[in-house]
Image (cartoon, rainbow, N blue to C red; front, side, top):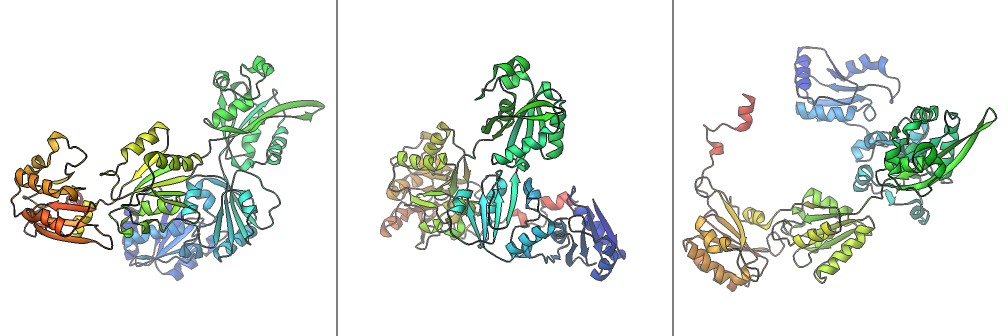
Length: 586
């Protein structure tokens, strides 16, 4: 809910504008005050109590020029709200929070942002940890879990933070640290420096017990889980059989672990799961061979047990009451292969997404003969960077699969856009065969770089509205209906890949297809590379241009009257043309 407070008519008008354009459903309890900051401070003084409970307060001057989060910037969401309002008013958000201004993680909201639990620290201890972090003190980041949140932390890791992927890896390091940030479902004792731990909700507990078992079992059971090395704060689900759905013990566990969802399964569901410790006695009573282990495994959706069935008992009123529990975790994060389009050559022309993958990759396998090595210079420390030029297809597959099977991120870096003459078909067939997870990040194709470097619009109204991307017929045969002389009949802008070595044949077929001999052509060698060269001319001289300048396979041939054409007029700027966005506002 967002409440607006104003002091004059100008403020009311601005409030109406903000309220109209502000995205609905804000997850924030906020007050937006429109007026002078001093008046705002005096009005909210009675609201100031504690940063964890104070509402977010944002002050906006009546012109909308300055937007200031006054109270509860992080926890209450005032900083985020201020930025959104500034975008609406065209003003400037005045953010004074140090972590925001330095690009550091907000440690006090990190758990909420990622759906994690967090250490039971006092506010004094939390503030001390935040101060150590934002002051740039050496910090160890130990990531014993992989999810979207830890991936983002890896992407945005500050220079004073060293990443470790296990506590063992940290312990083997002799680097000095003043703070540890730990993301893990495990319990670790005896750490000598201050620790701020976040608990990903990734554990699944299965529970079995006698009828009407005492709730005193709950604390003992959770204590045993901690003794076995796992954190109850990371338990996401509590599972059991339908026969036990009304047991007080399950209700007590859910009360102690509010983040955990109770999941109840039928005997048939549980009996379909093969458990490592089956029991005939349990089967006689419940109709399945293991309530605790089977419930944990079903909840983890194909995961594995990290704690097999444990038996325990609590004596209540002189009677021993027995229980069992087990703990499962989803499958380890599998590897991933990202096929990234490098763009035409200039390292600055790789996409932002592609650059991020290159910075995170554990293996970068790049097409060495076509992709400048400079594109790999952003690789993280410890990454393996290999050219595929000296590897056959089987060796490339073996290398990628080795990293993939270890749960690593592999970037296969191809020139231009990998989906255009990128030779990725065989690789995707391999990935499909082995059920490997992969995705494609598109890149800027060389034909787009050609248009940019030629300073030409390849589509001209009423003259040429089609771009044909093709290649000449060399060692790879062309389909009969895609021969160059047939495509030339369209008189479109044609961008011809991989054809410098057969340029005489290309020229002959283009002329045969109907392009006039005077049609403009451009031979573009190593587009956007440092040694880029571009030669313009006419179609009748194309072969001579290529041969005289000793141009090679890395040459894009462009043909068509769109080259250097300034005669075509776009309807976009015609006074009678109705823009879509204008029409939508009418």
